[in-house]
Image 1 (cartoon, rainbow, N blue to C red):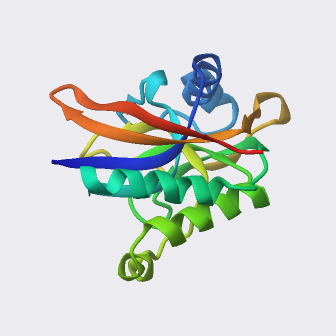
Image 2 (tube, helix red, strand yellow):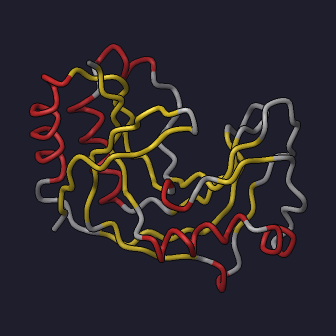
Length: 190
């Protein structure tokens, strides 16, 4: 049986609620992002930052994946992440989502680079054309809508700062109500 896996930074409930507010109509109007096209909010318990998507993996691979993530995290320092802008993605096509985008501290980029080199097959690494953009999806636009592109810097008072002190291996389980996430393992950073 295949398990759909990804490595991410999961958010504690209080932080997730704070970040979810960045997609509120009140804030969007205030920062000049205006009214957004029809969309579905990401439930606060599903807010996270994906570091690397592993796709469908066999149960027999999980022990090796644990070891690879452990090695990727080894010696890496915890770091502060600062959500400083809102942006629609993808950037050069019709937007499909609105994201809260963070800065790119070297520790985050190094963890991402190590995860990709250890967990993504070389042939798939070559196909990857989109550079890593650390972000948290706030909402997804409904199919058939034509949302306007957004790329706005958040005012200082609305920025959110949080600590990446651990990374998580998560399984995405498809249900009739959408994906459910199951935390498989947590890996601490220094």
